[in-house]
Length: 169
Image (tube, rainbow, N blue to C red; front, side, top):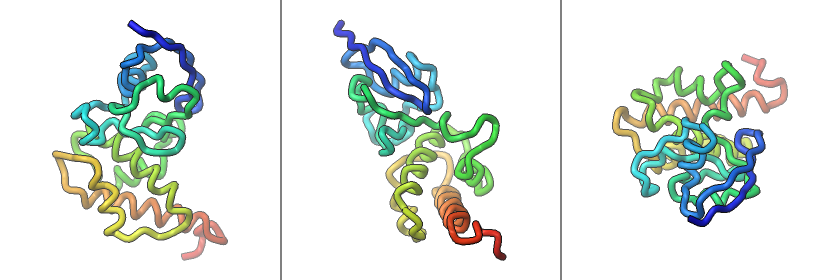
């Protein structure tokens, strides 16, 4: 068994650990570091339930080896909320009924978080958001709630960033 010492930041916390070369980032996050919000579905990179942000980019944690995250900043769903206060995106998911069983929700949240970060103030169309969320799978609900939640978050963030901080209206 080939062990490698790595260090990384997960949700702004430093971690050092020894991992097997073949251990996935998803298994490392869940079993070695206790970030169980990263869910494993298909373990083939198809479903997106294991999506996390690595250096700001969404990755399928089941397809990345833990050793590949050495020196990286990883953000999991646990890093979205501020203590007990949900993030704006998490609240929008709740408000727009964008979840049912919740198994796929962490992956959708992290995918949407990355997408919203890339918008740079642009206003996304429904079609663009639908294309983004189509890359993950949900077997419980339609995607309309997900689309609505992402659009609502984008609108709110855009309004907050505009002069006046969205206080008008």
